[in-house]
Length: 188
Image 1 (cartoon, rainbow, N blue to C red):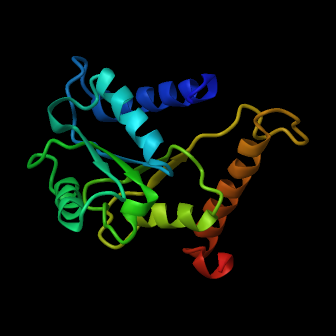
Image 2: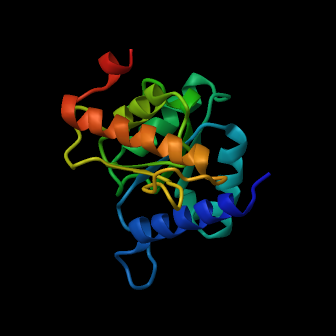
């Protein structure tokens, strides 16, 4: 189910997470940085969790998952752990699906968010960003998306065409957010 493009994305994600969460230490020790990674599908979340585990990015409780199949108590426990100061809980990477993330706060000790996939509905991007970009955030939010290789080229005719389109949607959402502070009224 996961071909070469998925592998390239996954390798990029792993490199990014290793750099952010362990890059400050020559010996590869974990630092205090946290990253929230959003995906649309539970299957993709499971696959990424296995991959991150294989690369040592789940060791010692560093990786947590949030998904729609969890009960409220478990969801709240994981959210609370991610919101604790890094010296009080080891979790550094949160893999979340959209269904699990509605209405949760992740901003206390996390200002980095990765959209592993770009949902067709731009409101989802806004909702994801709102998990870290909210009152109580002390750093400038850093939100990343994966883009196709030719995303800046006009008239691309390739298998990346859908990704090119969704990338443009993501850029428009980010621009509207920067200009207006929120995109909900515009998109509504």
